[in-house]
Image 1 (tube, helix red, strand yellow):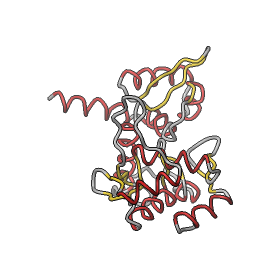
Image 2: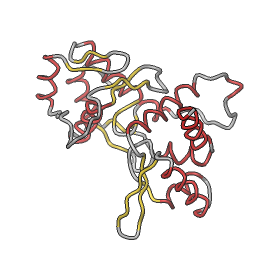
Image 3: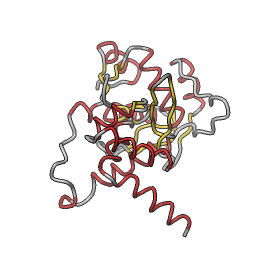
Image 4: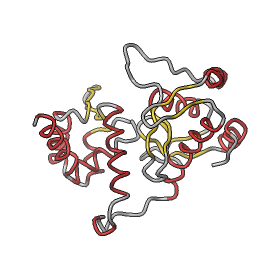
Length: 230
């Protein structure tokens, strides 16, 4: 009964539309203030404060204090994974069960976006496909690992996937992409590849939201290194 109660409690937290908006707004891995999240959720600051308190108490959000501001972000990669999985299930649900007001996925969001701290959309899936097809990683249903050739390739590409501190985060995990219905890469590897693409100037994150733009350097880089254009 304890597991059932925990499941019910978490589902209730996510099920409120305002709280769902708050959680999805944080899926890009960044931290936002209560004021920013109130605007995103379409509620007053006082109402947002109540929602944020419940999400923090439910361990779905973490909070950091900097000066006079409090910044909220998803509590862990596991929370992001749960939200992405719910999005996949929701997108595949019966048409009649989907809210009529739900907008279509924008072409930009479908093409390339962040999923917490890794790349998703067609770009993220293409990266996963390229690494698997070249035998650089082996991807199973629940986890992935780099081959000997893959470890050498990652080092040459400038990617370090050593765990930070005492982190027990999985090296590589397939994350089912809710728009493409195929896996992109999460875990330490997914995060490291995203960081490296940003360092190289291949991708540029939108100031607000999850959309990622592939730069001219990125188009050339992805073509030369991974063998595809976005």
